[in-house]
Length: 295
Ligand SMILES: NC(=O)c1ccc[n+]([C@@H]2O[C@H](COP(=O)([O-])OP(=O)(O)OC[C@H]3O[C@@H](n4cnc5c(N)ncnc54)[C@H](OP(=O)(O)O)[C@@H]3O)[C@@H](O)[C@H]2O)c1
Image (cartoon, rainbow, N blue to C red; front, side, top):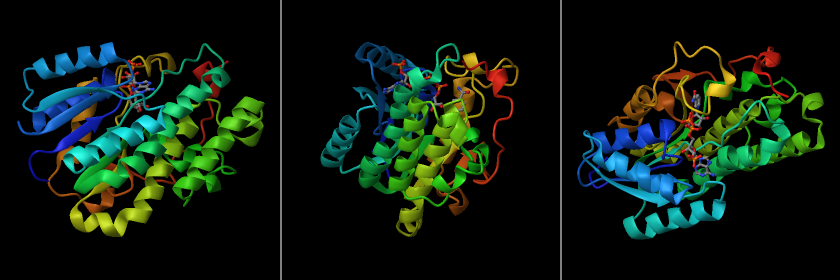
């Protein structure tokens, strides 16, 4: 990739997103620009000031308000960057709404799906269109995003699906949660599981369509898993954090992938954790949902 690159991170005012933006600013050049985005103006301004003052920072860091639940705002920012800078080099789609076990999942479904899945679809569409040759478009998903985590009945909805089909599957899951029929249809109770499968399926769908055009330019579209990281998002769902990474530790292998000069085609369109591809058909449906204390 050439100098004067533009990088953008969503949900970057804290957690893994902040560490990704801070890491980009430390590892990119002085002419490059890191756009640290989030939904709240005050939190974005504070985080941007923190990242700009961080001892390792070399690049320019600019804050931008971007509520990723708003597909129109995503499209507008992508169009603006396309017009003003001729495109974007690095897009890290990372934002997630908080999900808590102590409120019914159905009450939290819409925001959670809009932020995780709606945004993934919008970012793949809008930023995919302005990604410069040699660019990177990465969706922060999870190792829970492999197809085997779903009930076998539901897997055909996502396996080999187009982006429109993934979107339709996500909407049918949302409707089933609201109708109270999700469990009888086989959807896992923990919203994070189908959501992450949907994110990885969306990446696979877009990558399948773009692969032949992207690989000769070294362009990468992929999903990544950061591993278990101690943040407000993961805290309510796990009891053992002895092996958890800090956000900065979790960001490092993701940034190694994103900033590598040459992309191994094995990563293209796949879910990558710590530099390795997680097989799409891997995983098993969660058996011990009671452990998760979901009402
Ligand atoms: N933590 C883990 O163990 C773990 C494991 C696997 C995957 N992941 C994935 O890693 C990503 C980051 O997670 P994290 O643990 O760093 O979470 P986090 O600390 O809770 O941070 C989430 C970020 O998303 C932002 N956000 C929420 N709603 C938004 C919206 N509508 N528009 C824009 N930004 C919004 C939050 O902003 P506010 O401050 O304004 O709420 C915050 O900046 C997520 O995709 C998560 O699923 C995390």
